[in-house]
Image (cartoon, rainbow, N blue to C red; front, side, top):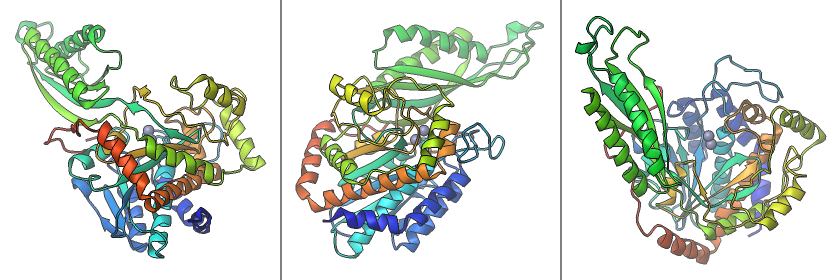
Length: 478
Ligand SMILES: [Zn+2]
Ligand SMILES: [Zn+2]
């Protein structure tokens, strides 16, 4: 089919999609508190004639919108949560909060969700007109920033009926995302002891804070004996008060345990739990261990990735006006940018040279080329809840340029640019790439069969859900 029809359709309704992105930008709601944002999407999907399910997986802000009844079923993932304390005036190249202490879309999820919606609506239009045969499902995935919304949705039965899932993320390169990410398990360790006067009768006290400290020391010694792909991180959530003359009766640690897949992360977690229990024995205290959330490693799918790459090249690349270039240069100057954008260790020398040339050694504020696609099993130590989807259906992801080159992640710079024409252009481009990819998959059954074959091999071990059955998705603040 002529993809120009998709691109023209998206352009003809661009004001509406930009309007949604701006609305979500202004709500800037934190993980699992995205009530207004979810309502905005749900209303829009209903108006467009999608079959909408709300409260998916029992999460008030998770939803899906389905259009069509034929095979194949293509899922498009959207996110819309913001980050704390990143409020920033849009289109301003210096740190200036719009609401002091407010939240902001430092990860660009206003653009992410609206770009994905753009694609879902375009595909729906083509199904409606009989030009495409299949079903499109837009997934409203809340709580990406630290609550693993998709993992809860995956545990509770979503994504399994899809023939493929597609998503994108705002970024500083136009690039297929390949390779794998770490699996991650997040837990709290709540120690309980006995309070006492720290000088008067310390012998009656049993310090939970001591137990927490000893656990951290124990884990410190564990680190030497872990595999290099593994990591353990911690923070103190509670220390039993601020008075040093009290033997602290409570202390709570938050731990994150990462490994190359869920099975290995669970093995590592057992060792961390042993250390927690050891700390209790040393201090005569007790500990309650509670899982908060978890995410799986990511399985890449090179068949889908190639289709996305083709569509990155086919869709018209956004062009930027002199004013946009000027603003980008101002923003670019607010941080020290070193290294080449989008370049991970995976990249071969040839690609590195190409990117060096295309970006003038990383010194061009806005990238306007498609990164060469180099399939790779490279491993990134960070985690994403897209991983859980990738264990249930062939899944692929890409980034599109909405940010300045090498822009810091989760930054005010990304909030600022997220409500400008630069962000919108990247978002609409991503929508075109997603829609073009979904159209290719609906038109060519063989592609999906190949993608499914690859998936059957990579996911042969089966989905080992990182979440215990009784863990409930809840906001970080709860
Ligand atoms: Zn993000
Ligand atoms: Zn993020």
